[in-house]
Image (spheres, rainbow, N blue to C red):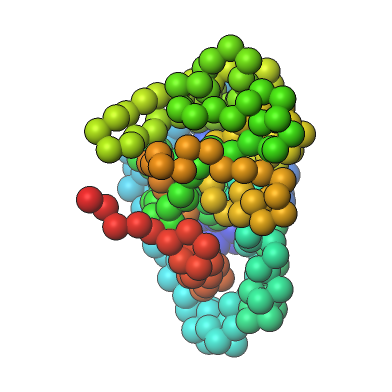
Length: 306
């Protein structure tokens, strides 16, 4: 039995809650992972996991051992990094998951500069607006808009998206230009709905002008769950859009979109980068986090809290 492989297999089973998922993330067979954990338990003469047909739970002894194992694996990684050129040039594969408009409009266009600086990091990027299982899918970190409600994750506030409501000139010619946010729900007007994966619902438009506050749900003809599809629907004239400024900016410049209700304010949307607390922050993850922070500082910096 390779003790390092056995400890790594055990740690991944605890993190994913499944021998099958652990095997997939380690690129091993389920049988191999099972045998490694069984051999580890035999060597330690203690049961680390309770197995049922439906789930795997860590025992009290296993939980204590897991905490030591995670630190030990991190120390080994640090030791290898410090003795190699990786400390000067981070390398290896990094799995991240980011919202689709953020990837298309900000992250991917900036990647050439990232690779010029870190040519030995290979990014595997999930691009979606769905809620993912970070540990179960073996993702190193995610970037998400809105508050992070999962208390098991470490979340870093990296930016704030300023928001506005927009429509195409063609839509405004057909439906008329609304003068007050209450007209978002008026007959003859439509919005494009966005379905948030965290809640499975569309959020209302919350707006303020001085002491006047309003929440409007809009009247969507179409509701989507992807940011790029949402923008495309608005550009097709299917309704008014609730957009971060960075998404609207190029379309404002080209005349494809017009901003509405400019004297009203919307609460900024916070952007967070999150990762599991038991996931070692390697050199490659650290530099990626720092790069995302710098990118957000340029396009959507963290705003002071009042």
